[in-house]
Image 1 (cartoon, chains in turn green, brown):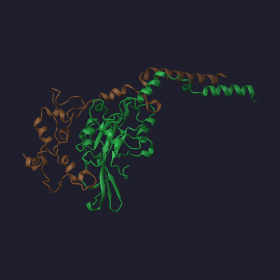
Image 2: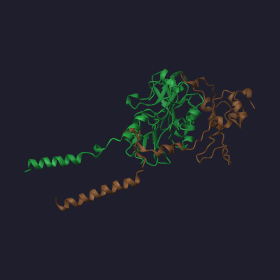
Image 3: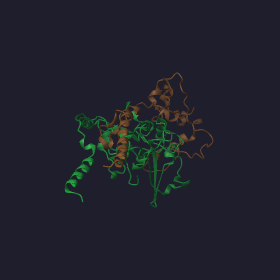
Length: 261
Length: 164
């Protein structure tokens, strides 16, 4: 038989043990101020893609792979270009052979598994190219799932991967709704587009933006009201990919079509 | 409580203490919660600087301008004016940190003269609502299939009037 006294004693002990140590954390005013200061940072990098201008040359993909030391012949890339072809009989085709590293020099659609589909010119209802890259989400799901703190959001909004800290579990690759993450074949850690962090922090443009001869890609700082990219995002009609996921993506698209996923 | 309960308990507590002690030495000082809180800002701060240190490879056309002023001037007057030098000539910098001009080794750049390189834009794709359909294209199987484009067209001044 358990006595009332024993019961109360044990309950209190167990409850006491169960209280997490975090509950005793004292709020550090310095940390709190840092958080407030972060809200006021002067830089928040965003990307703008004009799908009308993209011609699918793939120079952006080539430049990205060289600039960021992603093995050229491995079928992984930080950025890629997708081709969408909608036919008059209502079918949708989309492909991105080798991430469009060599552009699109054929009318045949790569269906995968060695199969191709040729589409006659007269049967094309609409067709266009869509460059893709990391959206540097305001609420990045890839960062939420990292169990070791190897991927994070820098104060200027760019999501980075700490290669020395990554254990290669692959949670982030699964979590990204946009499929921008992959394993680096050499480093064996998670890899992703980081807006060419080594370039933008030196005042340069990203390698893909610089390589684009058609002005389809632009990078800007949304916190600077005089930035031309900010002006376009504020005053023109732009869309984002998969807004229903609540990730608040920061790559904006002009001419985004419903079929683009 | 009995001894056989306490002994394993002490062992478990010992392991926890050991792990916590090892953590003090193993985890870097700048690892922790930063600006964006636990959910997005839990990381090693020095990594930001690591990423900034990556070598820049593509230097941009302005970098080439001073020495290669003739070709720079020519391409800027042509329909190819927006194409960067390094798109065809290859990046001026290497991962090892050697940059074309700044180095006494002057790494030789390999020019991509392949037909594939020109077909990136000049393979005709009749895609409405894409800028691609407005670019002049050729059928690579019929238009002098065995020779490089640059045999006839100077890429710095591609219209045939500018033929070498």
